[in-house]
Image 1 (cartoon, rainbow, N blue to C red):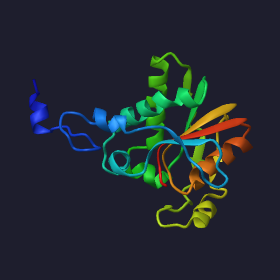
Image 2 (image 1 turned 60 degrees about the vertical axis):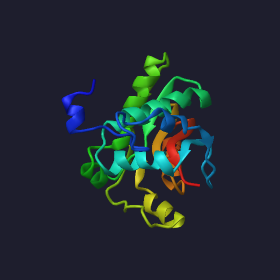
Image 3 (image 1 turned 90 degrees about the horizontal axis):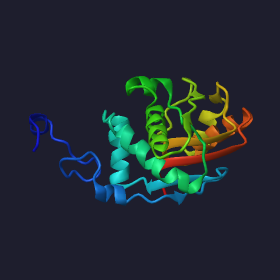
Length: 205
């Protein structure tokens, strides 16, 4: 039976708008991990193209205040992570600019990383969250920048400010040019991380 709250504030799938669920089984079934190829970026994967239901989910989470989607995104990443890498898993969330984090509800990928770690632990894996990367407030919004401008925008502005894990899984919502993911990998490697894998929910083609 549907509650009064359901009638007042009905829930719809962010991917396809069917009622009564935030992410339906059909949209979940559309996810399938694949390698992402970008210049200077090795060992990167995504669960879906940045289109259709997956894109709508990312935008709803990042830009439309759907905080509860961190659980769905983290769970989806946790499902595929053991198929591409062995644990234990040190999850490093890709950072946002401080102004972007303030405009949302904090570092959105950190919430996803915690949800991912919780799902991995429940499945019997060892997992920790290592939010060691920081993006300077001097970095510009990357929307509309060329790949070269994106790289220049991040140079020297994305740094590892904590103890870098020996091996790391960088989690992100979308890989476009690969500049952010590459900068994350470079910063971790400079700080002593020996092996870095990037796993994103979506990637452009």
